Length: 69
Image (tube, rainbow, N blue to C red):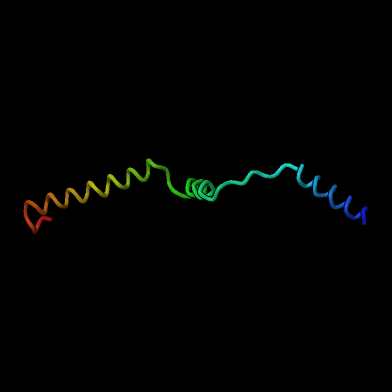
């Protein structure tokens, strides 16, 4: 019985001494995945400014006359 206990203790100490892999938080993994999948900020900014500009031009034309807008 002592041989079994010694083997158990030696294995437990070997496992305890082995370095663990560092765990990456889920939020960091999600941010990295989104950074790879989403377009660059310049493309998003260009799209937003184009849509907003067209919307403002349409609203201004509507303010002048309903048929134009």
